[in-house]
Image 1 (cartoon, rainbow, N blue to C red):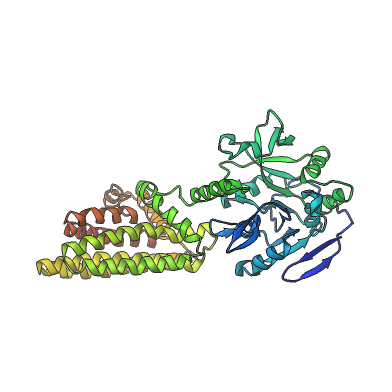
Image 2 (image 1 turned 135 degrees about the vertical axis):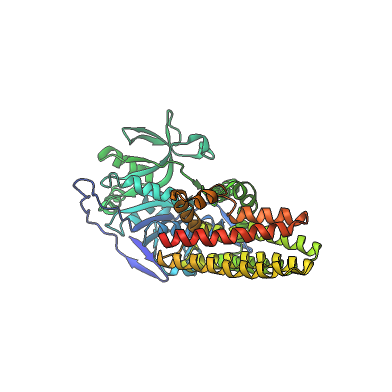
Length: 495
């Protein structure tokens, strides 16, 4: 009845036996959902890419194709086995998606549904019939942030024995409500669902969970005449009920047209701003870095490539500053400020395109520390060039040695923690240790907490150098490096 393929097409026979649903009370163990069905069999609108018409599921949003993003996002929350149901455009979808290296590393099966034109429920049955394990169902043209998926999984853990639908209660934030599927809930279950219903309190996000054995139940309902996903869900509502898993602060979007694509990318950019960001980062750096990251994602830019560029870009700025000439110092400081902004792009690209790695975190931490040490040392060299005073000579040596010592201490701490930890995470741990200390030194340091953040120090450096006070910045950096060496040594050693 159904055909399936991964890198090659192969015949599969749909399972006719209906497996029993999971019985018993809610498990205390963490829910492990390792299977997912993704529907990509629609005959919807296509778009042009390099003169070739492609199905919508291959449209790039935030640097990743919609189907690719759906697969990689679900993989981030533990899904290992994927059943991608394809139809009319199966050849193009399989050819392009199968060539993506990160997809090759996963168990991705393309299920060809011959009768996909009869309704999306038929496609659902084709994919669901391939597994007896608990699974997720989603559409290939929906995007979800990782925290949204994690929140859904956490909610499902409360009662994993019946199906659940991810729902958004923040109705004012729903984009294009007319096209959204509305939900009326009662006692945390779906009471009514549809696009034209009244009195709704939730919106369907297009993400379902089904317990063990429901794959065959879905396939059986299709064999008995169900044609749409709505038909199948309505039958489950009447039989066992379907939970409404309300996801707080949900970030999701379906992509049906160019305006929805633009909105999806806007929402993805929102996920790049961290709650821990300070005022400078949130109101200055992120304004520019997130837009830069979105632009770079279109070229599949590696986060490590950005880290490398920022590192050498900073060293060039330090080289200019070391000359001691005002104009070169000003240009070097400007370069340092730009580098500080771009420094956020590697992490943003990693989150936007799911390219985070342990090596990347280590590489970013090490290069960040070295480039700051190099730039502070360059300020000292400039002071020595202009004054000829040995105090700058020896102070520059101290800054370099103590800076490298601090960086090495942080690196050792990260290694002992099992890594990877970013500079921000290490600084947070140091701040927490200092806040608990009752010593006069720690109390003094706590009064200046925040100035040690790289975005703050970079902006301060830029401002002082522009007005010709680079020597003041050097001595601030000198004191800062000494204090950092002491506090990090005390806090990390104690930890």
